Length: 213
Image (tube, rainbow, N blue to C red; front, side, top):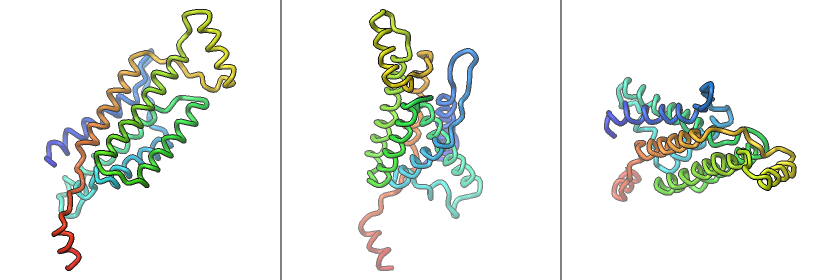
């Protein structure tokens, strides 16, 4: 991996993803930091990247690297964790039953991904599906339920649906720009994940030599 990508491109992409995921547009503009639970989920994302070979920590932190290079590698790893946690906080609904079920569902999905140990390409696809599904659920499905119905029939249906769930599914209405920011944050996080230093493939001959040694 080039020094420009490690020192500039990756930290910039991850920092931008964190800022986009944490910003809640409106008046006033609010920045929401990652929750402690999302930090746990972010740790699972980093663990899945390492287990799949999409991220090789030894190429960022190693005794053979200069101190400055190791410091920069640590910045990349920390920025990756925070960005993943911020994006997961962003796609988690704010309250009610959706918040509980999505939080539990993300934990199970990420844990299952670690256990399955997919390769790099399959893991990136899996993360894209997980984050994309969360984006659609929060900013399309739940946002549609939070919007005031235009017709009397629509208002009645929303009221009945809300009463059937004891008001636990209703969410705070968000501006349409929030969905665009969420899409951009997810795209940046996935792009940064694709640019991470992957584990180098070990040839059969090299593996045999190591075993003989």
